[in-house]
Image 1: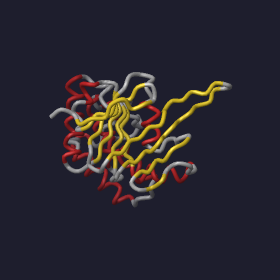
Image 2: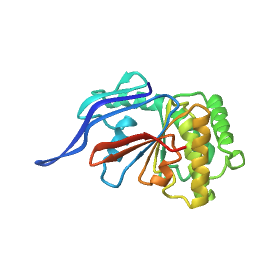
Image 3: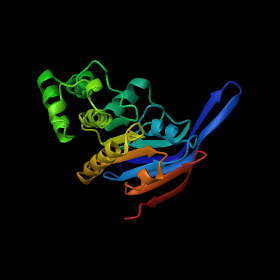
Image 4: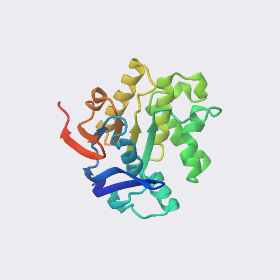
Length: 227
């Protein structure tokens, strides 16, 4: 089991007011699933993404990621689990503007202390995997939106994570570029990668093999996508 959540609650306190962002979430995701978590703004999907990606911890409940219990860990331990298990793809790409595509992809390996030669070889291999072999030396300002998101996908993959967590990955792309990124996720899933995609767009969610709908902090539907 890749993800196991039981009775997950997340409560935010703002002064005297407490906001229950997630209410008793139960969710299991197997290895090599492609799951879309879909919901409107304010539904709790961003909070759920933060918990799934070990960017935050639940107020109560059990969360296991690839067999490791996450709740209650300190920041350093969370970072270790996050770096080992999760590759993030964000709507805004989050690339360093003055670094080349290759340098951007190398970054997680640099933080992980991987030697220079191995780091460079792995980053090159990932850029080749996303069809950017001829753009390795280009900076983000010299790339299209679709190419920047491919660099972000390569960066997410370079640490060989057990799960790709994508947050509105086509939100800043035109239709053609968006379809390219969608196709890339489908290829990764076909190759054995676990993919969890957070989106408000039901038409995008339908490319996944399973759709989990969240509303008002609760899962209201969980089903296999239509073939």
